[in-house]
Each structure stands twice: as structure tokens, then as C-alpha cells.
Amino acid sequence: MTKSEFYEKLEFILELESHTINGSETLQDLEGWDSLAKLSFIAMGDVEFSTIVPAKALLACKSVVDLIKLFDGKII
Amino acid sequence: MAGLSMKNSAIRGIVSAVPAHSEGMDGLAQAFGEEETRRIARAIGVHARRISRPEQCASDLCFHAAARLLSELGWAKDSVDAMIFVSQTFDYICPATSCVLHGRLGLSKTCAAFDISLGCSGYVYGLWNAASLIASGCRRVLLLVGDTVSKCISPLDKSTKPLFGDAGTATALEFEEGPVMHFELGTDGTGYKHLIIPAGGFRQRHTTEGRSQREDGNVRCDEDVYMDGAEIFTFTLREVPPMLKRVLVSANWDLKDIDAFVFHQANRFILGHLSNKMKLPPESVPFSLEEFGNTSSASIPLTISHRLRSLLQSKSARLVLGGFGIGFSWGAVALETGPMLLPELEVVQ
Image 1 (cartoon, rainbow over the protein chains, first blue to last red):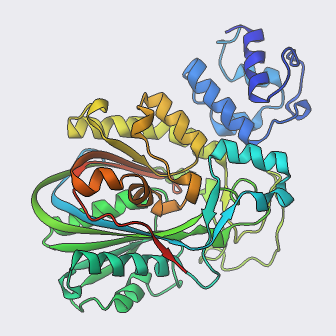
Image 2 (image 1 turned 45 degrees about the vertical axis):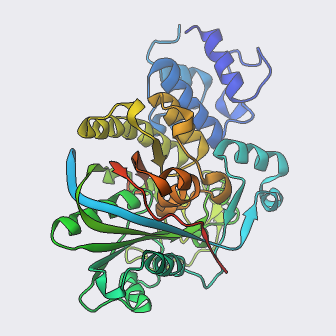
Image 3 (image 1 turned 120 degrees about the vertical axis):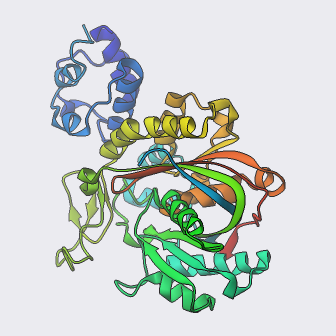
């Protein structure tokens, strides 16, 4: 998956307009990054990458860049 | 434990009882905002929950269910050899609520009675225990399973308040040569902190602190349920699909052989994702949480009572029941069961 495709997935989860996310955001900046969004993100990781993101690792993420790192090079 | 097969136990009937008072989602808008309440309701799939009166316990709901079950089956009270009460919302710290229920139901003094403290996985563990008792010589076992989790919920915690409802159930099992139940059971006790009521037991008798805003943004105290949804979801994804695959292998069944997969009604999002991941036909996964919410240990028998009456009243069906959650604890059983007594829901005033 490319980074822009990943941003689109994130925008869909957060119910944001297209091209709102460019990768420089902190998660605190993102409106709607809450417990329900985290569940949707974990589900997306399972479907798209067959990766079950550990909840603790997700909780430690501070930025969109950190989220990308969770998938270990599968987002280019 | 993998691949446990219990022989010669048949389910004769299930009665589920719910409190009369139904609470919709509208009342939550004041605490969480209208848009947020709608968003939560959409995600978890709950439209209403049955809430017990302050003095009404899980045992009261189970009592009504059990009395009706015994009466409609025509079982003499002295014919019940054992009774199990599965719940995490018991009457007293001690004695065991099963003893209280034994007295109320007027069961025989030769009837064994004991409690099991489990939630989401409790019905499957209860069936396993009941079938084990029958394998050890009991002829008739009464399995009472229910919870009133609404009593331990902060009204200002949006991860739990919109989700949990109350219910009590009774299941009658009897010796019969032939039927086989295939069980898969498991535990990961390292996850115990992710779904917990920290105070009220003997580790922390009481909390002196009132409700306050916690790290996750919700307002609660240590005598309220705390739930980390992300931890529950990742545990479910990790453990439940392999458990279901193993139980199907034990029973030597394919997905297409199953009439219904009845899961613990965790929430709609989790069950929807799980069903898609397992490629289960949507029509084979019944839900009851729209009307009743997540009723903890009672959710599987309540879903059977509410959604599978027409299937199971007249013929036998192949079911896979799966419970998973608090503990972390999980269990699945594959069984061919029915026809059985499945009356309409008992509504308790």
C-alpha cells in the first residue's frame, strides 16, 4: 500500500474530507481519533495487512508516521 | 483445553428473562452529545437495553427463568441433581448465590449447587460443567446464567454506559445417550486488567474516591466497570478465529454445515469484523444486542431464546456457540441440539 492510499484509509476511518491528511499530523491534531477510531484502525490493519496491531503499540503512537511504522515496511 | 468431547448430554429447554424497563439511546445524548451518541450506537449496534430495578439482581431474573423452565418441562424439583449459577453480579460476597437460588427454587437437599464466576465466556463454561456433571452420573442439571452489569456502570463512561444491559437465563440439561458436545476452552490471565471492576473484592475492598475523569477521558470510579476496547478487540482477533476453526475440526464440520453461530454479543463492530474475517454467512450469525445490549454471560442463551425459537422448537440444528472476553477467557462449543422448549422471553417487573 502506498502512503497516499494509507492516508485515504485513515481519512475514511476518521470521516474526514479527502486529502486532509498529508502525513505530518500528530494524532492529537486529528479530530475523531478516539476509542472507536482505534477499533476501526485495528480492523483496517487486520483486513489490509493481516496484522493485528497490539493495542499497547497503538496507544504509544503519537503521529501518523508512528501509525505507518506499525506495519513494518508494508506502506511505501 | 483443546478437543474436549462430552457425550450424552441433551439440552431440554432454555428460558431467558429480562427486566421490564427498557432504556433507549436518547437518554444518553445529554451526557455524550447527540452526534456522539448516534455514532456510538451505530458502531456498537445497540438501540436499547433492559435495565434492572435497583433491588433486582441477576439471581432474581434467573429465578423467574428457572421456575418457568421447571414448570413448562414438568420437571419435579427433586429430580434436579445439580444447579450451577454463572455470573459476576452475585447477590452477596458470600454465600454462593447458587445456594440462595437453591432455597428459593425449593430444590432437593441432595442437589449439588455451586457458582462459577465468569462473564462473556460463562455460558460455554457452564455447559461444559453441566455436561461434565452428567458424565459423572447426574441425570438432570439446571444451568442458570445471568448478569446485571448495568449496576456497575458509570453514567458518564461512553465505553460502557451505552453497551451493557441485564438478563438472566435458565437452561435444562439431561442425560440422553447419543449427543456429543465438542468444546474448546482457553484463558489468558495476563489480560485481566483490561476489563475489570477494580474495587469491591478483597484486593481493594472499597474506594474512597468518587468518580473522576480517567486517562481515557471517561468519568468513573474503581467500583465501576473499566473496559479497554482496543485490548478486547485485539485479543478477540488473536484468539477467537483459531478457537472456532479448532472446534469445527473437533466436530468434523464445515462452515456450511452450521445452522447458526451464536456469539457472545460483545458489540456489533467486533462481531461484524469477526464474521467477515471468518467468512461466515451473515444469515447464520444472529444478534440480540440491538434490543438488549451486551448482557455479559447471558448473551448467548438470550440470543438463542430471542432469535432461534422457530429453528429449535421443532427440530434439531447444528450450532456453534462462542463466548470470549473478560478474563481474558474464551470458550466455544459445537453441538447438535433440539428440538427443545424455547418459550417467549420472560419479562420481569
